[in-house]
Image (cartoon, rainbow, N blue to C red; front, side, top):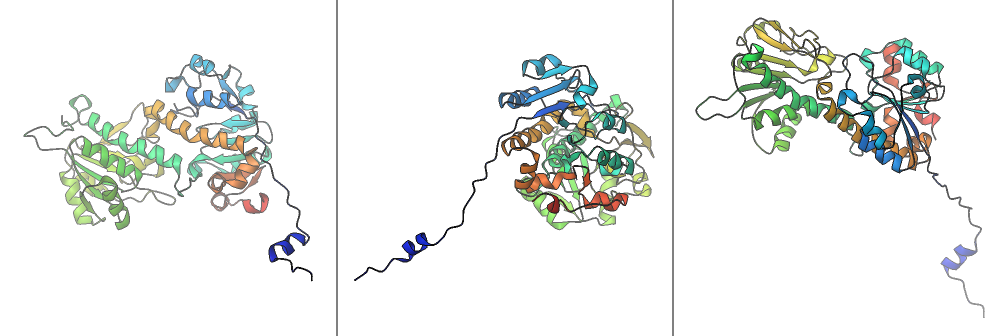
Length: 399
């Protein structure tokens, strides 16, 4: 009598599909870091410590001489970390991978080799159609680091720089209130027997949260305005304490602005920051009060705001000191450079470990989200809609 076979044995005797093991070959990267030429841009993409980590993993870094100077990193620091230093700009731009803080200019794009991988900010609102046509002509693969998402769906680069901008806005306001800057001679700080500084913060996002943290840390009375109840609730939860919060009720906002010593604008919009404080409201503010419009890079949320520079950062209108410098993090170039470097380094190591940019984009949705050009093909719908260009779905190009 023959024994019946068990289901497991029967399954083993059936023809099986052949499985192929897909190996991710580690690649060696050759990264070029040119000197930033954009107006008042003082940051650099990688710190010497980051360069050391990359070189120790078998990668090459070619740095243009002086690229880290504005962030107080010397060529010697990079050289000791294993970077190659050159004064030849075109040599740096000929590297297979280019790292920049600001997007390259049209003249710089001419120096880039075809099929180069470019990782930089995109800064969509400041671009024009010619920029994207130039990238397409060179068949460049480009990633905008402000669009890269992490595992939680957040934008790490934007968050990091927003934290700096929020903290810096309070420090800048503190400087401007002093007599040395024609301010009211007020000091941030909870001095015994002296009423604290009154601060109004418009916007409860990351910039607003870190402005609140800094202002509270210096002993100020803080009032926060935002139309999103969930953002206000999250802010209070993150801070672990109750504070004055309000939706954008015009009467409440006007009353707060009349009493405040500092008003910080930290709101964003789709195409432009909404104007939430009109000129009449600014006129009602105390003489010598300070406005820090962090939203100025998107047009500003105060009607009286006008773009200023790091060289001439302020102007006075209706007796109120206005600080409206875009790119506040560049004022603290070393801290900002370390922040950016902390974001770049793990992604570069991951690209190498995955065997190149193709595989990295295949395996990492967050990195793929930052992709806006793939071998000269536009893959970002927002860019396509904004400039009336044709685009292809990235998922059809990368399987």
